[in-house]
Amino acid sequence: MNLSLKSFLPPLDLGWNHVRAICAMPSCHNKLLMRAVPGARTGIHVGDAWYCSPDCFAMESRHTLAWLCTRTVVEMPRNPRLPLGLALLAKDTISEGQLRFAVAFSEHRGVNLETTLLEQGIVSEKQLAAARAAQWGCPVLGQEPAGQIVEADLPPTLLRACSAAPLHYSAKAKRLVLGFVHRVEHSLLQSVEQITGCRAEPCFITPSEFEEQMDRLSPVDGYAEIVDNDPGTVPQMARTLGRFAVEYSAREARFTRCKSWVWARISGKRGTVDAIFPLKAAAANAKREFSSAIPEVTEALG
Ligand SMILES: [Zn+2]
Image 1 (cartoon, rainbow, N blue to C red):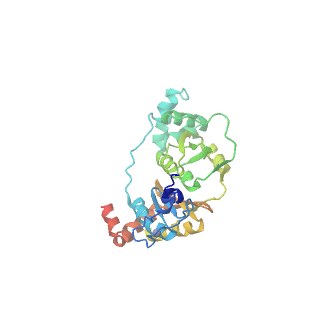
Image 2: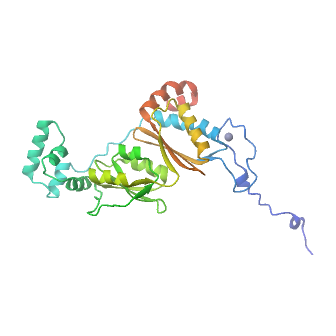
Image 3: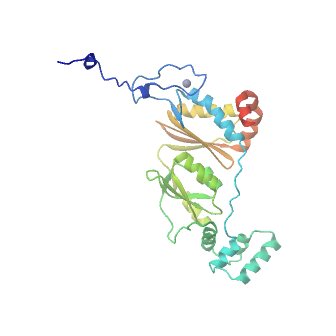
């Protein structure tokens, strides 16, 4: 018999990775092992960080919020490859004579070319959408309108602000097709990818198709968008998120910025909420209030 002491000991798998959860909030008092049950770790994940409670999450989210609010976004001006008039000419939608007339007429009236082309009946909405697609090098929605309800966990406020409607959305396949009316809004594409993890592909639709599609947009079960038009200071915004974290039994949070909005998503056992904070109001407060409240953020902001 060759029995070593080891044979009598229980296997040494204590689920250490699950147990050794340390809250990422530096002044958190919960420095001890949080939960001894593997896999049952609660708390809130934000990227690689983990917070033991909604309080710690809210406290630390002030840094992220302050950064998002005050950061100056230098967006590379992404303009279409081709001017609209040339795109229409290239597609033989209009003649050179029509284009010359429309350009002169637009200048005379001080309106843009598209308005003239549509109002004078020179092009249809559909032809204009096709020309824009050619300009941006993306597809245009086919002859058949999508016609189906699209269930999506996307904030309608941001979609409307960018004149973009979801045409197809598969959370499982991580694929989203967004139909734009005026231009491809890269800020929306990027923020949607950051928040949902879905690859967002642009195409072009007409203004009528946009309205029809927005009517067909339906929130997925358990999803809500909450627009806070009076977000207050950064600490107040953080407290708002803390309340949502409690309300939704948060497990995960993600942050991004889309054009002039801060977009925070909190998902948990009781669903998903997208908190939308308008940036103008928030930034003014953030610069004024927050710089004096938390020195290290002021330093980070330069
Ligand atoms: Zn904590």
